[in-house]
Each structure stands twice: as structure tokens, then as C-alpha cells.
Length: 194
Image (cartoon, rainbow, N blue to C red; front, side):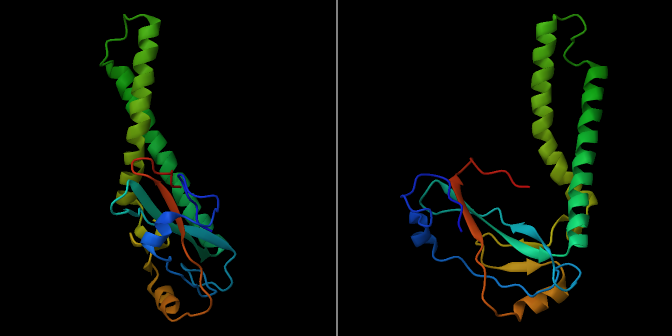
């Protein structure tokens, strides 16, 4: 079922943009973990694309679907996300300590209200910057196969798995298929990804 953001008619299944975009591509997965090829995977991991802006509109469409993984691989992927988050928090704390020690805002002789306001704005800036730090740390230190399981292209119609053996199985697998969900939202108002 598609997830829609915005004003559409009363039916949750219908969106005027569906006519412009056409039907979503359907995918079918072999009954194997897409990372280690273990039989009968019990968990799923989200593969998503950043999507694209629909031509002639102010709407951005992103695609996402769940791909099968075993519980061991799911745990490894989740642990990697948590480690990356902890490393990002560590870098943010180091930056805050460095700013406190350097005192670039000359807060030692300021009133408490001013100090609070400066540090609140600094915390806001650091929290925004930490998103970039999170993805930068991931790109530098985390191998691609531990960041995810597959790449879904911008149009949501081609799925490439990081495991080449599973990719071969996937390309030769033809039972009933599942379509990726579409998310519609205004440009610049994109939903959070996790």
C-alpha cells in the first residue's frame, strides 16, 4: 500500500500522481537472506531511494521496500547503525567540549540568559551538523555491505543487491511480486529516513 503525503481524494489507494508516474515496478525475492543466502529469512531490511521530483510539480517521490534478511544479518546491520550513531554522538560531545573550553563566544562574563541562548543555538547547529557527520563517518569507516543490503535507483524500478550471488538468484526468480511503496511530499519537506 502506498503512503501518500498531501491532499488527495478520499480513497487512500488513489493519487493523481500515480497516473503521471505509472504503475510501480513489482519485485519478487528468493526465499534466501539477501546478504548471506541463509534459507527462510525471518526479518526484513529497508531498501530505499532518495527518489526524484515529479516533473512539473512541487512533489518529491521516494521509493522504499522491505527485502528479506536473516536475523543474524539484521542484527549486524542494526549494530552498525547503533555504532555509527554512538560515534556521531562522541564527535558531537568532543565538539561541544572544544567549544566550551575555547569559549569563542566570550561567555565567561555574560549573564546566564545570554549564555543559555548562545549554547542553545550552538546545540541546534551541532545537532544539524551531526547528520552530515553521521553519513560522513558511515561513508569513510563502514563498508558498503554493512550500510545496507541493496541499492534502489531513483525511479524505483531497478534493485541491485550488494551480494552478487543473491543478485543472480533475484534476477532469475519470477513468482508473484511486491511493489515498492511510494511516498509523496512537498519538495524540501521530506520524511525522515532510518
